[in-house]
Length: 316
Image (cartoon, rainbow, N blue to C red; front, top):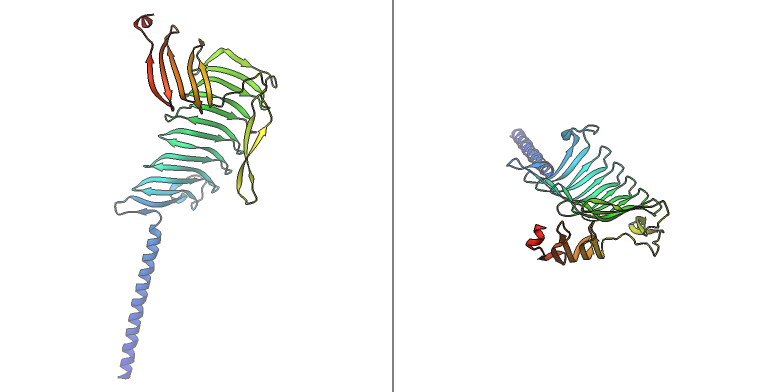
């Protein structure tokens, strides 16, 4: 009896041990499955959800290793949303895009392969809107532009040399040059002054200068320096090139201003901010030069239109 009892107990122990191991393995598998589900998850409706990481095993791009991460970001109901990061084959960030409803729509940054920024701005409906910056590969600003909500350059636009010196400055309106565009030599002196009306150059108003013949404006160059805390701090370095009293410095887009058409008629006047008319008036003229309409602006919006046109003026 004792022998049979020992055998029975041994069999029961082995049976319980097998059950214990089986349960442990199942629990481990369930935990592993749950961990895997936090990445590259597809729900019961076959929709991508949550955070996804794509390697080149999936993307199959040339010059990438199979295990390299190519892009990563979030899905909501099978659509890209929020910040998505894309990588070069050297593992540096290539671009960071903000998605809404599976389309880039929001803040966007593009990088050179060396890690320096290339472009930065707001991408909306396949267009740049608001402030936009384009950089040289050495990190210096190349273009400092402004776009309206229709994706047209509007306001004061600036171009820079690779050494940080201002190259071109002037105002654009709805994608076209408006007013005086000033071009500078690399030493800061004025190279040319050209006057535009609705994108058309007034050749009679064009002025060209030899180097150092006309002094330029004070140029502020932005750079960065390391503080004692190890953080980058913006520092301003003034490139010494002052304006002589007899010269008029290029307009910076803010303040009182008048703009004229080719015939010398005022087309806009008042107070401007960043190239936009805030408080003032805009005038329209008939081909014969007589004033046809006055539009009054307050707080950046057109609040009133006054017509000056008569039937006799239209016939003329």
